[in-house]
Length: 322
Image (cartoon, rainbow, N blue to C red; front, side):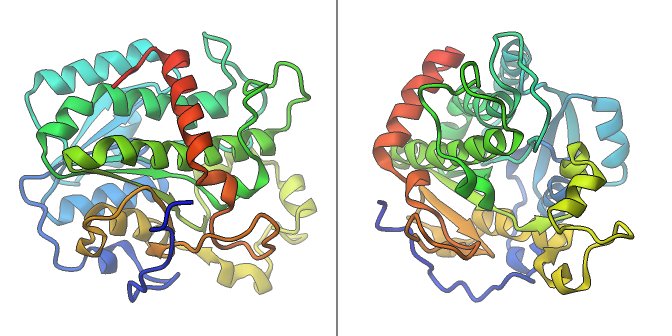
């Protein structure tokens, strides 16, 4: 278990916003890539980084729709990218590397949740493909630009849902077990943390540090696959389709949801640290596997042996090698 996986008492809390965690940080001249940066908390991340002077590239499956969402935000540019298509990832990366620009911040924000069973062209299950393998592949391809930056950070969006599933190395793609959309999502979110652990081990000597983020509970387009009936059955909506009053304090606004991402991307208090899971704009507490509250990071998500096993398998599955 990484010894750095413990709170540093940042001074922020669950209600802190991205603007607050940014503070007076000046990002003039810095280059960032934010996947999923045109909607939800990704849009708030893009907006906040550009307000600090950064130039932000937003890769998107639908560049026209993304450009509309980003209209009026300075220094935000849109490029085509489909995280479930390795050819698309290679094309985007080659274009970026061809520009000669360093990459100071890579924010692996995009993702899907509780989707029906879909496989990419290689046969890989969609949550594992889009949420983990796509970002693994993208990070590996952009590695030279991250090295060029001298001091870069890679922030990958995970979730408290990592507690729902370990990585099933014997059946990653639900070829033998029954498909469960929540286990598929949970597995991909655990993979995001394990990826962060292994990535930081490889990048620290080049000044590249990695962080995994639980943004909190936010109402965004991420929930688009979940029918109202299921939300009601899970107690997340009342009979009127509204969030029950007693649960409203558990939800964050998109600005609050982007706070931990921005904190991990820019906070000087994280200098010299990495390979950790963060929540509420602080490093999360490592908790035991039988921990009941919905905070902290469980052992299987920060297990170094599992992280190395996943890294090797991800290289084999994508063909992307550092």
